[in-house]
Length: 309
Image 1: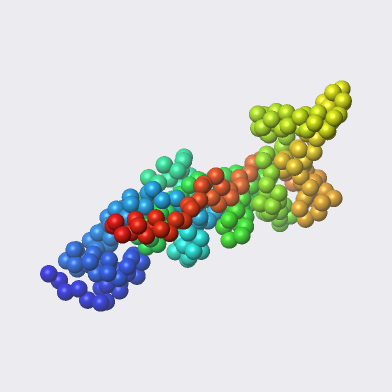
Image 2 (image 1 turned 120 degrees about the horizontal axis):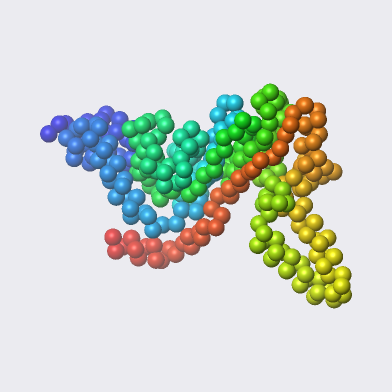
C-alpha cells in the first residue's frame, strides 16, 4: 500500500474541499491514487446527497450572467438549507457557474440542465457539480429554476440584496442602438424598476385573465359593501381596474426614480433622444425561496434523530 502523506491529504482537501478525515480515508481506499480518491469522494457525495434529499432547501441566491455585448442573459435560483451557507464564496461561485452555463448552453429545462456537460469542464455534468458542491459544503443544494433570454436587442440583469431578488429584462432595439449608453441605462433602470415595484406583466393585454376577473369580483363586492348604488358599481369597478393596471403593468407603473412619469413615457423620451426604436419585450423576476415552505427547527427532534444514527 502506498504511503499516505500529509501533503497528499492537503492536496486532496484543496481540490475537493472535503473534510480532512474524509480525504485521508479516500486516499487509503484508493491506495494513494489522487484521481481515484477524488472519484471516491464524489461517490461518497452522491450517498450524502441522497441522505439530504428529504431536507428543505429554501435559502440560497439568485445569480445572473450576461454575455459581453448584452444579447444573452440568464438568471438562476440555486437553493441551499441555511443563510450562512448561501453567503459563502463556494456556494456563490457555484451559483454563478450555473448561471453562466445556462446562458451559454441554452438548456431546455432544469432536467436537461442537470444532464448537460459543464461548459467549463466537459468531463462533468451540472449534476456532478451539484454532487461535488454537496460534498464540499455539506448541505442539500438544488437548482430550482432559471430564465434565459437571447435577443438582437438588449438584455439587462440586476441582483438585489445579495441574491435575494434577481431580475432580467429584454428590450427590443435595432443593432445600431444596442450599444447606445442611454438605451443600456434604460434597460438597467427597467431591471431596477421590476425589482422594486414587482410588476406582473409588461402591458395590460398580458395580465392573466382569470386573475383580472377575480380582481373585478373583489372590487365589485367592495363597492357593494360600501353601499354604493348598483347602477354606478360597474363604473366604479372600471375606474379601480385602471388603478390596478397601473400597479401591475410595467409600462403603466410610475418610474421609481421619478414618479411624475410612467415607464412608457420614459421609454418614449429615451427613444426620441437616442433615435432608437425601443420596446419592452419580456421580463423575469425571481425572489429567493418564494413558494417554498421553510424548515421549522425542532431541536429536540433533531437531537433524537442524531442519537438514532
